[in-house]
Length: 617
Image 1 (cartoon, rainbow, N blue to C red):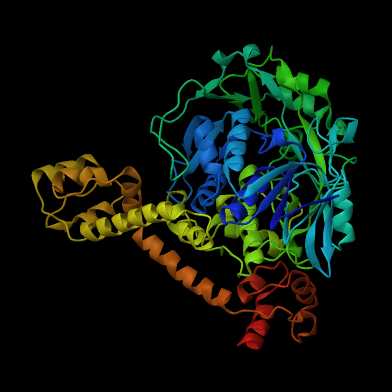
Image 2 (cartoon, rainbow, N blue to C red; image 1 turned 180 degrees about the vertical axis):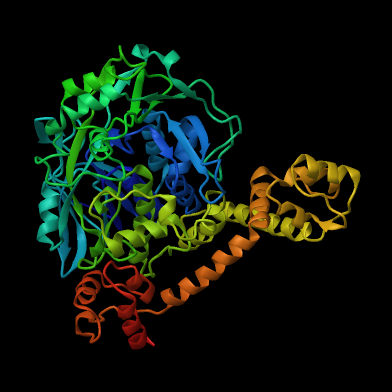
């Protein structure tokens, strides 16, 4: 049976697939999103939260490129906090608790409202190719759909196996079938797959928890939102609560180490360090007698509570013991036990920075299939893969976000250059230029790229540029505003714990003092224009951290020199004299496109780089 022809087909309706399909359709390309269940689009099978350190930055970057995650989150948020407020602006971001089921419904609304996008429910069993190029897909029912580009976003479904103590069975998620045929198909195409694992925690009944014994974390008082188009607001009534495990909890886990399939010999994959199971934490840190547990609501109209921190693959009866050993949870009822899942993933060094496969033209991969962990990492890859699938169809060069341009760029570069041996989790510590790549300025950094490729509207782009102009003009104005010494000025400075001034001082100079903020100087700056909060925030950061920012800009200039030294596509590293054997092997496998990327390939030494630099000069 022959289906219709599309320009781009996206396989998988998770967070990566939704962003990929919406992006290519926004570019005017006829797009088909194929998913095994229309009702599970953008499902949140793990925590009902979006954002957090590193991840919140990615959400803002997706939004800046015209993606959906931030807009959908703003429409179903029930609890919102700014995190890392005790640290500098480089690592501050947002984390939202959402209504899990509503998130999926709102995402589907956006997809169905996109005129160039069609949905189809079915299981893809084969990616069709001809002479090294993608030509379409075949689904289980026998239908074929042709396309010039295909994006694979199958998450944890490839040969998925759920493990719960001694019990194991095939599944993509709890209650859903795995995707086995397409895993075999990728092997036949010549792609190398690996094996990873992850865990989910048990879900609890709100009515059976003694919240009086737990620490409450309400939403912030400050109005907040994720999207540039969002309306900042405050949230009430759905707090997160903090519980703590006990020595009894640890004793229960230690007595059952041998029953954890992902910790011991049953699993084909190694334990996870970035988002470990509770039993793994107890195993690796035996001296710790307590671990934090965050009890997160799954929605306003459900009693289901997500027990963040109790990721586990231990047997169900052991999970009951663990839960009841925690103060406040002695009578807690488990609605859904936690479980572990193992799945195939594509070894991502087989991809270009565009996320296109190196051996099959027009075939792109995004999301957990590439070895990442988390909705945000998946969505960030999804929008880039969708854009580049569209650019491939249009015959245009791909969009590549560099490490100095965005967290998304850092993530993709890490994946395709270094590869992964466990699920990749994006953290601020992995980002070299994080003072430049702030949550607050993502729209200023990446909106021009979104507008250029056609995923961001002209109206939105012009609003961003108007904000950029307002920030620039206010910074320039502050450099010219004189503040003479006076009793009132010095009283403020002394109250704030900083030195009084003895001569006329520019407002921008006073603002560089850590104790002084933009609003403090308002009484001494009568000509100050009325500016929105986000402009004030950027003005203050740019002025206050100017020296540090300039230093990072210089570092970025050096970085770009390395990135500017291009390596020819068919360069044969194995024949280069002077390279170590390890460098030859690894470089030939990764095929870096620049000297900078070559420098980040594991096993490549400074002397190897010196040899390459001479050859490329």
